[in-house]
Length: 124
Image (cartoon, rainbow, N blue to C red):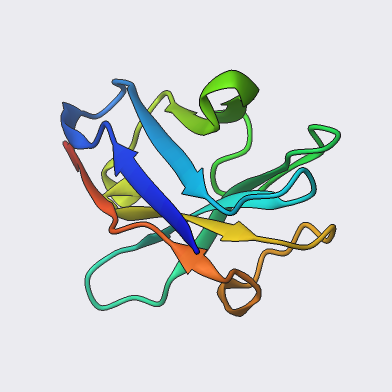
């Protein structure tokens, strides 16, 4: 089993920044992908970003590229999502997820393990 615990959500004004963290524990392996997804009220879950642990290959959604940065700390088994220039439309519950495959998927169904989610609210 794998456990994922997110932290770092909160309330911020438009144009501000937040950094989310997701700590993984349990039976992780050296080849896996960590993804970030978000879901706003009344909307479907949306891919945000993902990083492949073995080689740091990263993918971003078009809506966040250039504003968000995903990174990892191998020693802490933690992935981060630095969110800058936040907009009200970024308001959502953000969840991290782990996919124990080599493919960097943007589809939620590909991810086997999920964190509990953390609320990000951007005020205008």
